[in-house]
Image 1 (cartoon, rainbow, N blue to C red):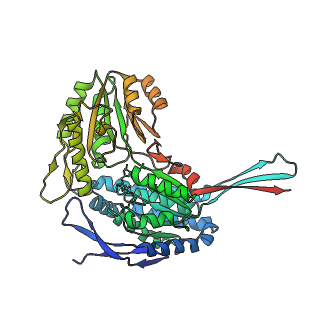
Image 2 (cartoon, rainbow, N blue to C red; image 1 turned 90 degrees about the horizontal axis):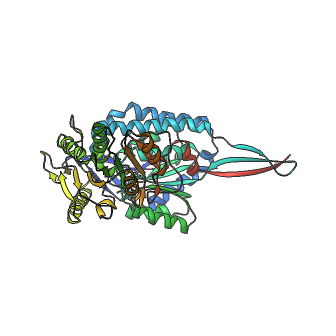
Length: 480
Ligand code: NAP
């Protein structure tokens, strides 16, 4: 069968880029999902200009029409969740249930922001001057560049695009080069939603080629980025130099604390889920398991037993717990961190080796290292794969100290039956999101998402907090 070609969406037209690149299934590298076009700087420029031209009408247009279009997009995504979930699992390597779950999340996000179109409000406040009244309103920021990573190929494009459009902005979306399929499918749905040409543009291609032209383009008013800390830092500096609004969601080195009084079965289950599900490729994954002395032997034994029962295989296979790593480069990075952990003195007690299955894919047995300390690279740097290490501590105070002993601050979790410790941890954990007896990953779509320290920069994403980034405040004084 001929491989299908997919083009960029610019000003409502499907446009061929400089060349095509294949989208490869990490479960089976002989399976090519499709060819996806690669934009150059000139095409990027055309997309930004189309968005600029569409902005005046869209930003002041009818909010019922906006809400209807977003609702229609959400409805179609939800109706096609199995098909799109299959595409997601095929291109990124999440298991099919995880893929379907992510697609459902994307659909629900569009539905949520359809409602937000109608909920935007302002304030009228008395002036300190007689005969004057003051109105505080929110307006769109303008044309927004959205740059997304490969690990959530539809949810992250959705959670940036939906609020951007809901609050009246125009969009140029650059998805991750590794997984353009879901972003293209989303663009195709948006192109039939009734949203005018130019309001939403999709420009696929490499960050190294079109990243700088997008971030530095004078027609771009703001950048919302999710990805690694290195690229995020660079974008922040470029935006600061041009005084552009910027929002960065970056990496994590999230701690999962297990206290002596934890429910053992629950603690093991949420640790396995946090560390290894979605192949550990979640910014909210727990890669540091901080375990107190009293429960340590039982916890370690139960973890090894649970890990031995995990089924690793083709993301579309029935009963598979963990799919492949998303790319060869990421697999090599994961393997190299296992070696780094061992060289630093960590003990590899489970997994950590490449698996050869019937089809050639990037399979890795989830790895667990013990005898690690906070100073080791394995506990300071983001691996972004199914690799977790255990830090053994004496008690709660030391556990909290170690949990916070990281340059990151996205998500954190505690497993305990003690209200006292749960409450204290909730208050003192230096993370944007705290989980009590729940995995560090797995969040709702209608509440704020984001972190502290090196994990995030700028205002929160998702829920109504998204309006902080996607709108700008105007204060109007009126003489009465
Ligand atoms: P990445 O390498 O930083 O890439 C992210 C995006 O930036 C991609 O679209 C990439 O394009 C683009 N890019 C690369 N160089 C660029 C440049 N010079 N200018 C502008 N854009 C550029 O990250 P990734 O490997 O895709 O994703 C993994 C990272 O994302 C991890 O660190 C993970 O923790 C983080 N993440 C964070 C969150 C969160 O909400 N905190 C959520 C998910 C993931 P290419 O694809 O062409 O390289």
